[in-house]
Amino acid sequence: MKYDVIIVGAGVAGLYAALHLPRDKKVLIINKRETFKCNSFYAQGGIALAVDSDDIPLHVKDTLDAGAGLCDEEAVRTLSENSREAIDNLIKLGFEFDSDEEGNLLYTKEAAHSKNRILHAGGDATGRCMHHFLLSKNPHPMLGDARVVDLLIKDGECYGVTVLDHRESRNIYADSVILASGGVGSLYEYHTNAPCISADMQGLCVMKGIELEHMEMMQFHPTVFVKSEYAQKLLLTEALRGEGATVEDEYGRRFLFDYDERGELASRDIVSKAIYDYSKKTGLKTYLNLSNFEYHYFTLRFPNIFKSLQDLGFDVPAQRVPISPAFHYAIGGIKSDLHGRVPDVKGLYAVGEVASTKVHGANRLASNSLLEGLVFSKRAALTILDLPSRKKFIEFDVVDDVMSLQGDKEKKNQLRRIMWENVSIVRTKEGLTKALEQINALLNENIGKLLKFRLLTAREMVTHALSRDKSIGVHIMIEEKE
Image (cartoon, rainbow, N blue to C red):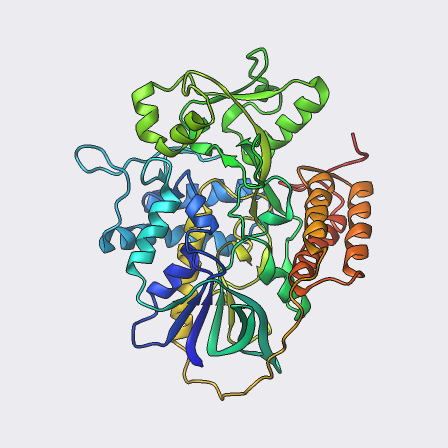
């Protein structure tokens, strides 16, 4: 089974790459579970863009400011300069962003943006709408319920993947492989990610000696309803705060202004740290107050949040909702260049949340993630199309590793607790060192390959965090555990 291109992951990044690979190319998209079980599907707030050429410098500045000095400026410029074209292309293909009665696009504002430049679709279902649209336009076959468990690499070149399909391992070959498998959410006890986002590809890359970058940079969303029995928690989009929702304590005090003059409109890392710090100091619970919204507008603008909270028994927007930060987005990932290429491995690409282009630096600007997926996946696809010739075929033995063992589930849950307690919003050297010892101990036990992927990714996150002893962006270090 030989393809021109294999794409691992069926979220926005993977599907947009596929859209730019013509039908005469033999392309296979591999997704681990059902197609909707990806982070793109759960993206609520919207997609950022430079509204016009005059806005490019402002969008670049806002992104660089949020990134706290760790962004690659060329990457940020590439993102912004290609943003309008990406949006216009979607519209040309038939995608409908929310607009007014005259058909004018509705731009909104989110935290740390200097102007209204966020587009949304379906009110609070931008990612879901975009994902469904790209699925409907996908011209290539998909292999579902299959998990990539190995990369076929020899002499610095990737020749394909090994998949676990119906409990059997088999090799699938390709001239080029694009990794678009998402982030690391399931490593944490509380997160907003799709349930199957479990850091497989990052861990596999560690096993293959492929560099991961900025793995200490993990973003926590400040406004999440966490009181549910599932690990995936209900995200309350930043667009709520951008349009008037306020954060307050039990007594109605808007304490965020104690930490930043922008209050609710400060960047995510500042708001998450403020909620954490204030709750620690006061013992008070934190709420999101939605009463500034008119009822009819709220039901139209945020229909999915409205229904979800109503189902949970909240009379929104009149009633406030208890919130807490939870893990949300992996800023760090597989090191890649501005064309998605993974250094030192010819034929291997990484795009979207699984990748690190350094466009987000130390803190991702709100709603830049869907945009990143579009811009860099297209660049990867076009780079592949420019390749001069097909590579020589090399056959690999199928390595049928033990994927899971009895007891792995309990160890997986143990890892989630370790990460939440020691590698989350606020970190200490003591806590990180303890986490590293526990992760290494688990790695030395008799475990399956799938759990090993998770543990290797987690260890990279911890070692990267330990190597950066100063706070910056989402990486917040304190002297001792409070």
